[in-house]
Length: 93
Image 1 (cartoon, rainbow, N blue to C red):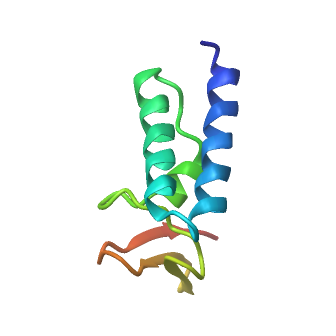
Image 2: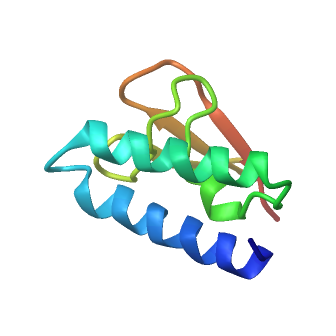
């Protein structure tokens, strides 16, 4: 598969995950996991939005306002998930 086709499929799976989280959280998590595995197995660079939305500890999607809180503190973006205690920090200028 070409890299562009893989990235298109990953974007489609991300949209599906965010759209259906309220109705079926397990479907959303499976779509997110499938997108992650697709990138890893094909050696495609993982898009930044996939790296941000997926929890590295539990694999569940971080959707601001639904499954995670986002805080801006001292030059850092903090993702505080509701389901696990893993805190993701991202620096910004």
